[in-house]
Image (cartoon, rainbow, N blue to C red; front, side):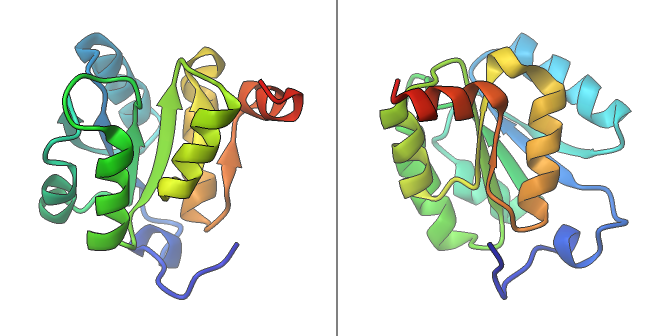
Length: 151
C-alpha cells in the first residue's frame, strides 16, 4: 500500500522512528519504552487511555501510535477513527492480547495499519512499526494465523 501523504519517517527512513504508546498497563509501557529506545526509536510518551489520543499526537508528533484495544474509558476504536481524521499522516499499530477475527477487522476498518499480538512480543511490534512507516500493512504471526483460521 502506498499513500501520497507520507510521514517524516517514511520520507527520511534514516531518521529514527518516533512512537507513542497507549496502553493502560504502565509496566508494559515502561518495558516497551526501554526496548524501543534501546533499538534506536524515539519514545514520544505514554498514555494510559485513549481519551486525548489525537490531541497528544498533534502535540508530540509521533510517526506511529502503538494502541491497545482493551482499556477502560474511551473506546480505542473511536479514538483511532478520530486520529485518522485529525492526523492522517500518523500510523497506528494495535498491540493487543486479544487476537480475534472481528477485532482485527474492526481495527483495520477504524484505520489501523498494523495488528500485533502481545504474545508475539516487542520484536514483532518493532517490525510492524517499521513496516507501517514504509506504508505497508503489518500483522504478526499469531494475528495472521488467527485471521486465516477465522478465530
